[in-house]
Image: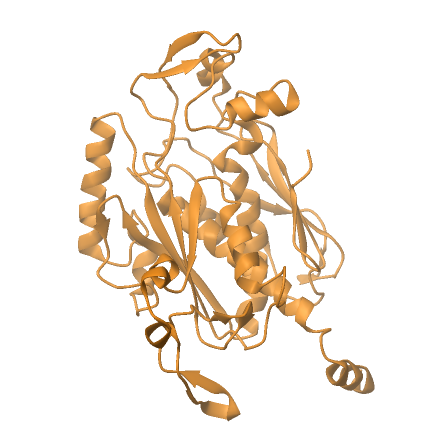
Length: 371
């Protein structure tokens, strides 16, 4: 299977299946000298792991991350850093009835046509559980970004018809992101969203929603101006998360209803000789390059396709058959996917920062003159 490697200078390669022995990631190109331990990374895995609240699957997994290589005496060595997350709570028998039937909304049919057979136990590589490895890599990147003064965080903006009152980019209560069941930074919105999710569950249905990621402290000029635009790379990273069906930067789809005079962000004199902007309709990226203002992304997640009500489908012999999905599934993926989005953005941002270090001869010369 190709397509399990992401990044340019900083590359991550993930492996493992939902119901296999373990999931893992190899991070290549991560700089030496960063202090890291499994305990530094575990809080990110804890935000993603299942079984935390009534709005997540009841599957119980510790999601304890193990660092296998690339760290010596508490610091990264610059060599490939491998991490492992063992599966301990899989109930593969729950999927036996699905072996020859294609689940609506899943990748079952596509996998079967592409490879000639598929791992029907939870979807194999197409399972949302695959994202645990991404979170381990992104948590590592977050450690270095924080040392550089770059703050990357994500939260739930809406679930179904329930949305927080703040628009993307407006200040939110960051502490509530990890305290509410929905990852919404608003207690009333969280209460209403939980009630909506419970209503969907009782109707044997599921819910979708929107997550927001904000990157603050980003220097200007990061990204490449043609095929590897920063917004294109971020969209690639976030769209690679299984349940994401749309990504918006800044004002997103609303720009098609705007005018040039309204959509343009006026430049103003800023601190330290840098420019500032009166508004941020562009979401911190112009011409594929960061402009120094906060980067704003929104990801739209589809409703969980595994629902308890009976659905129509076909089997491998193309016969129409009814399908009822058992097992343990999230009624909504957004609360656990928030940290996945955050970590994919962190990986992309750090990779772009490393690539940018080779773009100016004067800086290269100065670096080697003083090294």
